[in-house]
Amino acid sequence: MKLETKDLLTADEISSKEFLELIDFSIKLKEENKTVKGKSLLENKTLAMLFEKPSTRTRVSFETGMKQLGGHTTILSLDEMQHSRGESIEDTAKTLSRYVDAIMARVYEHSFIEKLAKHATVPVINGLSNSYHPCQTLADMMTIKEHKKKFKDLKIAWIGDGNNVCNSLIFGCSKTQTEIVIATPKGFEPDSEVVKKSSKYTSVDLTTDPESAVKDADIVMTDTFTSIHTSDPKRNEKFLPTFQVNDSLMEKAKNDAIFMHCLPAKREQEVTSSVIDGPQSV
Ligand code: NVA
Image (cartoon, rainbow, N blue to C red; front, side, top):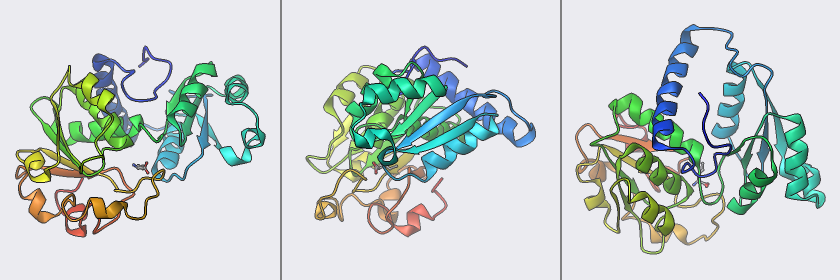
């Protein structure tokens, strides 16, 4: 399927209709991939993957996905490119666009990927910036559809840091009309513009009380308190013990609630082993 947008930077660029179609298309593709060999959807297509930050899942999933669909990847570390010697983002974007069919980039500053997208003539996909993680949102919404078979009348409780993953997830909820409640300590709320914009399409509530957030929740989600771009060594103290997802918090969600974490996880910090390695964890 073809999207209207050239780039995927936040998850807000995709219309609600496209978002829902994309999830169903992905589920179908995943199913087919179990049985049909030799996919050619991306035959002769090359994806450049630019990394400024570490990656395990994003790198492996993009690389494997490209290969399973008949394409290939070229993996580039920004500190080994001419950009590290002062070549502009504009020239980097224009040059890469002559060689490859799409660019995925994992960067610190979101403005970097915006600039890359502005000057690249090929699609640019955000593989995580300090502000957004749209691919994680698509994957999370796909997981939710696989487990719950629907989006409407579902409630997500996000517990912990209102970070990049949370910002894009709020957009994902607005596209699918999924209710979301975000429980964070004061000062760790998601981007207020994202909340304001998304509230027009679905219920987005902020609270400082995790117990009220998980009440009647179908999905409980969290992420590390410390992201790659955050370095305050005292950060965890602001979250613990109140914002840890543990058995007692999970008990307050619906009986059939699922637990989700984008990983990497810090066990016994944002989530206990009993939850992340337990039966509700998907
Ligand atoms: N919030 C995390 C997500 C990692 C996939 C980070 O930015 O480090």
